[in-house]
Image (cartoon, rainbow, N blue to C red; front, side, top):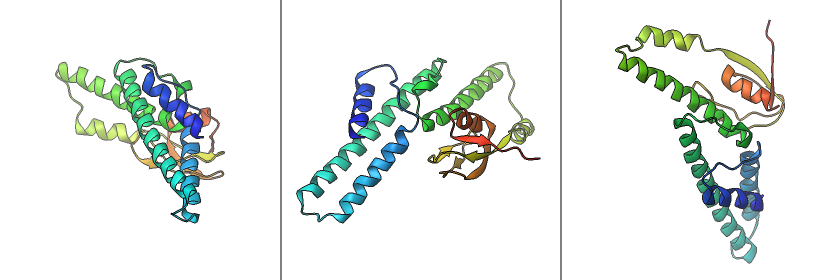
Length: 186
């Protein structure tokens, strides 16, 4: 995992375009961090191996931090420039976050246009928008970390066979990626 993280980190820092990440990249990176921490707990702090693991942990955290923020800046730039988001380059968590941000960007753009025309949404119409949001019930086929829903609420983390309800926008992405399936309720 270290080599894969290093390659992704280096690409994002050296290139203006967005690099591709596997769907499960962040989940595997999290597992990698946990394994380093667990292994380091059982070692004597004075050993060379413990020192090397501590150094590796610091480097991994630093690369992950820089990778996430480099990708964030690139994605925000794409969204604000109204360019198509290349979903095939995104990890699950990024795709979910982009869906929420795209929804926000589109809503804000409409708000700005209406404002300039002398119109503003009333509180009553805002309430009706919230009530019309659709919720879907899903059964998870794979483990996934927590995600931010289109309603800006946190959902998860989810284990295989968990059942949960969430906004339809997020459900579509998870089903499309083969991480969950819709449960029909009659």
